[in-house]
Image (cartoon, rainbow, N blue to C red):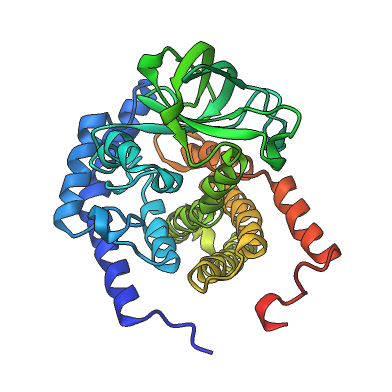
Length: 390
């Protein structure tokens, strides 16, 4: 059993680390200054400039198929890259990406939506969550009814990432209430903002914020159906599934950087004539953090590995998401405690991480939903204790 990275994985990982260190981390002080003034850390043009610099490094479209100009990297490699990006709190992501379910589009839809999104000319958002349908996504109520060659959408979506900036939304709506969403009663639509939906900013404890999307008699052409009628819930679960290993991969990077800050601070901060690193309380917080971080790393890499092996990744991904999200919350909490009062200020990024990572236990599947999936798989015999080694 070999736990080492391949030469290619190590080379790509190190190149991304060099880019983050050289191009992204120098922006951190300015990002914190702007966020203290309640401004975005990066504006759209600055993000685009960084993405184009990354493209010169060869990083463009990590998961995008080569036929569309992307790298089409395996899931394990993508996980390693997301970990590197997590080492900086600057809100940067590589360009050349599009929602994974947009590749189900027709050729006409690809020209109108997919290609411009990959090229950075358009911004999308995915809208399935509603005020009464969060973890229970099958309970969506936003209705789409047929009217000639159009569909008319009425209802509300909420907590939509990129909803304030997107110029089109992938909206999962009920098209056959009698069937229900899980049994073919929901359909995905590509809906331009110009068709009449509006967004309302939602204030949260984190930086930036999601949106509510309001649909009041929005008319959408039949040709804007993504996939097939009745396929909406399946596409929605496919979209959510990718986050089950990328989000906790990002959490590992955050935990690595934060823990290193705690180690550096413990070795230099003195109380009562000695570094606080000599205190057993500090040593145990560092030891617990490193142990949990390492455990999370391998759970998450295994979940990405199952994707690359063509296995059903849901059980492994749920364990990685559950443990990774909890781990980063516990590590950041200890790091803030080690830094004392300074950790609580907005001069350091620790309190920012503290607010940011709390979301990781909620979005793309709450802790409780991951526990439900894991226990159900075992209780119903869908998987065995020990997974693929059982």
